[in-house]
Length: 145
Image (cartoon, rainbow, N blue to C red):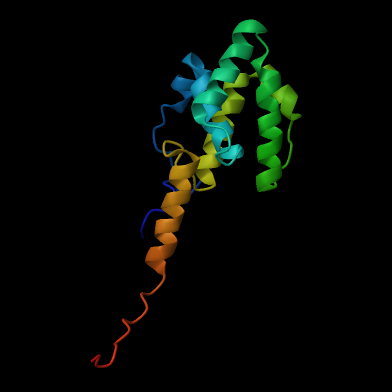
């Protein structure tokens, strides 16, 4: 039996593949947030710009969780996810890093390769769709004088 394409085990009791996203998020949450924001914004804002805004808010006010909770709300709306057990703002204010890791993993579960960015994922989907379509037969032209 082949493993699922998204690298998530079919049995929830099986251990999940090792991930370094938790360590990255603890030391530099702006990178994780930037990747999340780029996917939620559907490429209209780059990872770098979103991460820089997050870092600026964090350095100036220390309340970057208020900014990132809006992205959690938008992501829930896009994928029809329930707001539980706490509100989005409470989740981000109580444990910002845990909330970011959860959102990152949810986007991976939705089929995104977070290292590709939005445009890379769109291109990958286009290639997959083109590969799945059969090639039309070549047009044979008659004799030309």
